[in-house]
Amino acid sequence: MQGLMMDYPLTIQTILERVNQFYPRKEVISKLPTGVHRYTYGDFYRRVHRLANVLQDLGVKPGDRVATFSWNHYRHLELYYAIPCMGAVLHTLNIRLFPEQLAYVINHAEDKAIFVDASLLPLVERIKEHIGGVGTFVIMNDTGQPPQTALEPLADYEGLMAGAAETFAFPQLGENDAAVMCYTSGTTGEPKGAVYSHRAIYLHSMAECMADTLALSERDTIMPVVPMFHANAWGVPFAAPMTGASQVFPGPFMKPPDLAGLIQDEKVTFTAGVPTLWFGLYHLLMQEDYDMSSLRAMVVGGAAMPQSLIEDFEKNLGIRVIHAWGMTETTPLGTVANLKSNMDSWSEADRYSVRAKQGTPVPGVEIRAMDEAGNIVPWDGQTMGELQVRGPWVIRSYYNDPRSPQSFTDDGWLHTGDVVTIDPEGYMQITDRTKDLVKSGGEWISSQALENALMAHDKVLEAAVIAIPHPEWQERPLACVVIAPEHKDQVTKEELLAFIRPKFAKWWLPDDVVFVEELPKTSVGKFDKKVLRERYKEYGL
Ligand code: AMP
Image (cartoon, rainbow, N blue to C red; front, side, top):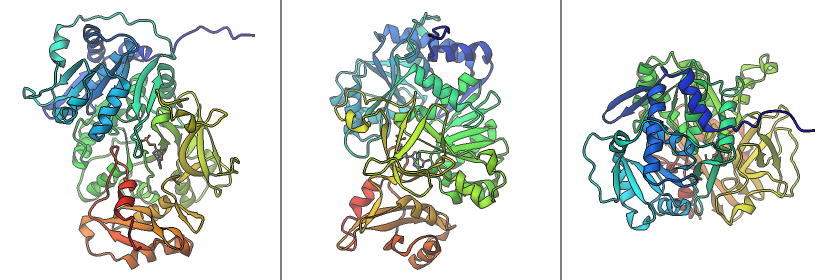
């Protein structure tokens, strides 16, 4: 027997309508080089209609890919809605990709037009010979100066908007239609495209509003620091309007004083970003006075948030940290580390150790971990296995990519490439990327566990542990450490090793510690261990 429910497609169009109907006076605030821009969701709604007309006038048809090359700001938000709501596919380009990778993804997606911030034009100009298929470059002028560029054909965003009709009849869409696409940051090989459906984004937005996940609500003012060109800024630009929360966009201003200033001035209640951002913010807040009292929580993911930093934020600054895990392929939220009620009576140390894990899957997502022999590992918090996931916002293949089949199991789960343990309460903890594990004498050493222990030292700013080749043990760990500027030259290798020694078996300890000025980062701000491995490939041989 069939259920007797309405066939009501879950689309981004319904989020757009809702935010205008119920929250038209809530604000969207963007910090741009030309000053702080503010308008309401009502203004936003009207401009999305104009923008859909602009797209149609440019010849964009349903199914066409339209790219953005842009910071987080209100025009980018308008594109987030106008493109998918008119039936086309928003392709967010990562502004930090290498030129060859950028040209590759533009050509692979066959982008029809690119909407680009004037301040980022030089990055697109570098590849203009290689992206001949792009029909129009639309400049979003965030500089206040007339843009100088050799790109063509060229159009001006505000000029087109001024000439466009005010209303647009959005077509009826199916919930499984493509809405957004985003390529993985791909530290090895060519990037791969994830294509999100309207349904996936809609359900993902609802999941982010659940009380036991991120609890986003109308009362929030949310600042996504995670870029809108990386995994939909973790879904905030869709979830916030769905629930009626205001948004604050930092534009290109991503330094700790900019972020602290925005939180203080705009009374931000919730923010989202990768740990490297928060290292810097923590050190700033410990030295200078900002009013952070509006902030109820920050969600941190994309890379492991060390337990020590979670504790520091909460105990020294009163700022709650929510650790979460996700990936481009999972729209991206997969797990969140909130405590269950039965853990309230646990010791503080035990509660922090649970909250430093990557957490339990949000409703809709399923997880399991598998060993190299293909056995599902027990949920004992000890046994490591590769994490596999499935769910309504997990991709089932990459876009036009022959490498797709190897990324999925025969029974339809996505291989994440993360090595994890799962404890009896269902909390997943990442021990490494498969390619970052140190394999010493056939045994696995978790580079992330060593990094977290090193970063708990109060003079250490950042630490990355990599495998270096070893004649006897095949691989051994090497720690690359950045000391906080105020403690430069005050820390020795012996001191650091003595600090972490009590936590590990002797054979886990790094063979050496090298002190570096900074760690190389990937295009989305994670430690780039590929670069480090290359740099130290002959270390100690
Ligand atoms: P991306 O698709 O670029 O967002 O990268 C996804 C990958 O980032 C995951 O597969 C993990 O390896 C890593 N990652 C994401 N969140 C976390 C986290 N909270 N802790 C550790 N690694 C994470």
